[in-house]
Length: 371
Image (tube, rainbow, N blue to C red):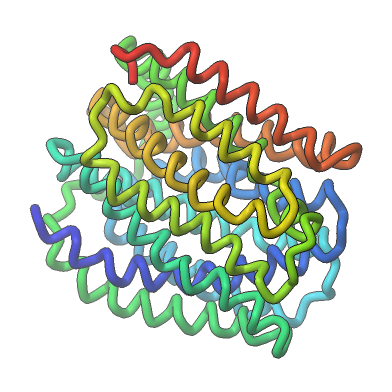
């Protein structure tokens, strides 16, 4: 069972490749100054809930390992045509959507694998995997915008190349993982409905669903317009990716420390998140410390809530239940991201104030026995 970390290196490399592409895309879209499309791009990962629900039974059929490899290959290939597209915000956001679908469905595959084989160490192993992803982004986020300034095709071709290399390494690492148990043949249409019913009707999960939905809403509101806020603060474009990498540094540290977080310390985290998110409204360079501190709080609280949910998930229709859970959370994230895009047209600071209120409410509802 301890073989899972052998796959963390290629996953970190894969996140480096993805961050190359998304770092460049973030700068290209933020340059347009179109708050709606900046917000839509920030919400993009949350808008994958429809495909997650439709395709999660496929993961139950083929198993997490095969599904993960196929999704990682698709994600790599989708970066190749991007340099040929017109540089319009709407088109770039729409092309990024299937990349996010492949990425997020791969996360569902990983969640299913870990819940199935690492349930007794779920918080620790989940934190390590998410730390590996965010550590990979520490180099990719600053490098992507810099490559874009050198040549508009470089970050996207680089992303595809690095992702294909990561896929090759992941293919070598996955045979060392525990053998998957899945049933060949078609999955009945009822399996997804049954998984969702089991998820929503499972009493031990309900308080954690509420807390998680509120957390996701606040996080989406705080970060949907972050690229626009960074440029608005007066930060130079050459440092754009570096600032985003500081947030990833906090995520990685939060993942690494998540397994060591005493339950009692989780409750004040929403207040810390509110304080750090307020720093996004400061001018450059005063916003610098807010980015890693916010990422640290998100990494700690996200791993804590994810572990609490995973420990209480029903066994039946696991991949469908995980996809349903992710879809519910992404619905809250989509609401926050798109709402940020709409209200950000009036003032990009408004969504951050909404995030502060959401984090305050999360603090009030997150009693110690639940957190």
